Image (cartoon, rainbow, N blue to C red):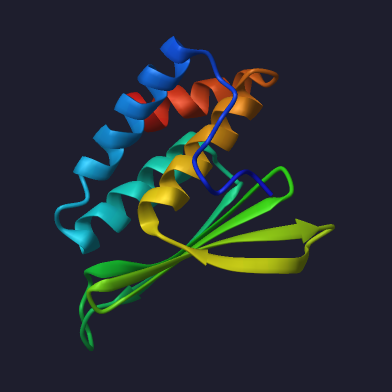
Length: 139
C-alpha cells in the first residue's frame, strides 16, 4: 500500500505541482455530494473500466441519482469511498488477486493525496495512466 502519511520521494518541483493539483481537487469539495459526484465522473472518464461507481436515487421515484460508493484498484491498493447522508468514509485497502488483506480508514484529504500520488507513479510507466491523471487534474 502507498505511504498514507503523504510523504513522498519526489523532486521539489514535482511535489509543488502535485500539491497544487491535489489542493485544487480538494477545493472543489465544498458541497460534499457534488464533490463525490464530480470525483466519480472524473475517475470514470479518466480510467474507463477500472472504476466501479454505485449510484442511488435520493428519493422514491426520483430520476436524480447520487453516488453512494467509488471503488478503484491501482497497483496493490484498492481505494474505496462510501457516501451516505452528508458524510463520506474513505478507505485504502491492500488487495492481492482481488482479496483484501488489510483495510484502513483514512481522512478524505489523505485518500485523495494517496490516490493522486499512486496514479502519478503509475503514469510514469503507462501512457493510459498519464492521460488519466492529466484528465483528472485538468478536466
